[in-house]
Amino acid sequence: MEFQKTKVRLTVTLIVSFVLGVGVGALSYFKFSPWNDEHPKPELYIISSGPLLQPDLMDLLERSLGVKLKVVVAATTGEFLAYVQRDLEKVDLLVPKSSEIEPLANQNLLAPIDLNRIPNHKNISPDFRSETLLLLDSSNSSRLIPLQWGFAGILYDRTKISQPIRSWNDLWEQPELLKKIAISTHPEEIFGFLSLPLELGNLKANAKQPKDPHENALDQLLERVLVEPDPLAKLSSGEVYAVQTTNGKAAQLADRFQFAIPEDRVSLWVQSVAMTPKGAMTPAVYDLINMLLDEKNARLLVALNQEATTNELLNDDSISEFQKARYLRKIPLPAMNLVSFRGKVGLAWESLIRARIHQRQASL
Image (tube, rainbow, N blue to C red):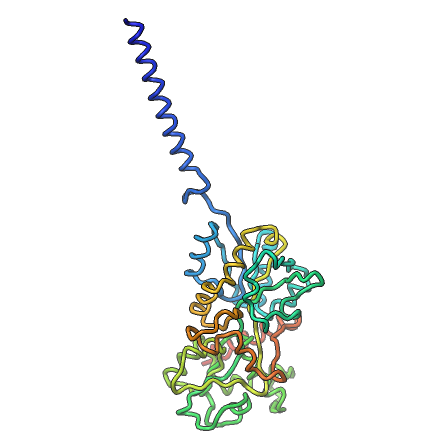
């Protein structure tokens, strides 16, 4: 009888131990499972020239892909290229603007992108699929996927400026607009204005000025305009009568404001995504690019960044005509100029612009 009781106790003990063991094992597995939120997610490292992936979009991408996005945003072309050189072995994805593409390509830092692994690439408008823009090679592999674009145009207050504005020269030659025009601090966006004193021969014969004609042109520009971090706010408040802004951002203001495409010069920029050699070996990078080209996410990009899209599916009234891919066709081809820096000369030019703007602002 005692033997039977011992046998029963032993059996119960074994069953309890088994149940407890399974339970503890299951809890341990759940705690350390790769699908548990506490487990570190794979990280994708992105270097971006200016903001592209806003927090709301990043959160959506991270949850959908099960990854952690580490995004470093560079404020200047020089800063962007320095980050890329420093972290080339670590970075997965680059977000360059037109001005950074040439130095990246010259140093073979852009890996071929297999478009077959990005089915949504068909959503890119034909206007943005040229060989030059995508850096296509003989195998039809692209090195760039364009996402958003823009150009520097003129947005002006029709209640303050009665005559239609058709060119940069129309603003440059009107004395009543002295210090009533605002431009941004980004070098890519001031080339339209800056080209005027160079092309019109308006350089001042002043021995105190630097001999470099570009520096002379910049000095003359800063004598006539205000440099503002938010030119649109100045225009909306009535403090200035015209601003230089992108077509995408011009969509924020309507009613008494008119957006003009300059007939004499249009500096076009395109913001793309590009893979590094490391990123080309990471499936999640392809998934990320494919998601960015999805219609819903492309619409979110426009809403967050207020820039024009390259996605041809966005053709309804939910976004402004200025922000659609087809608006590119409005630009007169003779005036179009794809913004491009030429190696060290370009970097020096950017530094010159920023230094002069900082110097002028400090003296006020």
